[in-house]
Image (cartoon, rainbow, N blue to C red; front, side, top):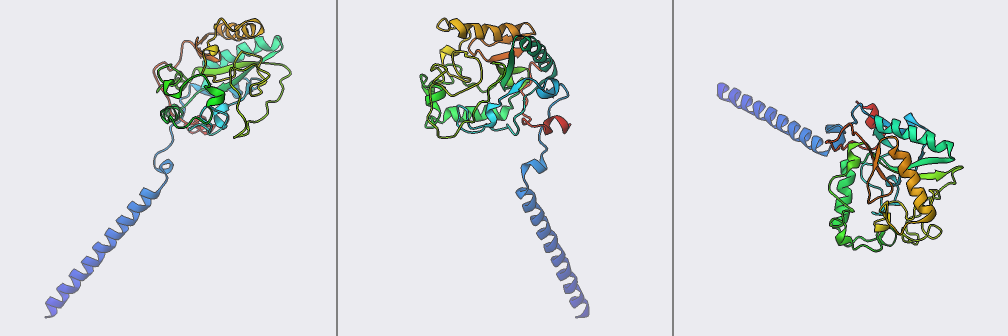
Length: 278
């Protein structure tokens, strides 16, 4: 009986230990599952070829639209953590060169968007597929059916912005007037309306607002004449002279050539930390 009792005690102790180990493992697993992804998987960071435009030229005006609700989505865009223009270093240096020329003429560049993470592009795609969400249609695509945004080329699953050498940019007459903040829910006016009617922007008159899904946004659209055409040509010639190529469908869209990362679509967030955590 003594040996039998001892064996029972040994089995009981072993079972208790196994239960404790199992409970501990389950708790650890639950804790790991509850942990934010950011703790388990570090955020991607920018390669050394990227920089913040302000570090290269602090005189260029920034109005980083996708950190605000004043977008064609009506909300802040995924991946935009801070109102920074991140861009490849050669593109930033070329912008600085163009800025010096424009400053002598009484103008300044203003950037709306620069590097765009893939997660932001994915956000655009999800929004475009949701045909019931037309909150910002009256301003950004009043003449285009949302169901046509992919077919007409306004939305795509990849963007050159994600390679880091593309910028959305305009020109501001100096001294620059402040641009009032957008108030969510305010009445919307077509981006193709006359400058005096559409949302106020301290940019010179380019014929349409930024991110206007309309053929009037085509850089050489023949309906754009007079001062508007002169302004578009000033922007295009200033950037072409330093190595940028314009996208014909968007007067604001320019890509520096040759691109340092022509085949890579990055997904690090737009934040200062993306440059320092590497």
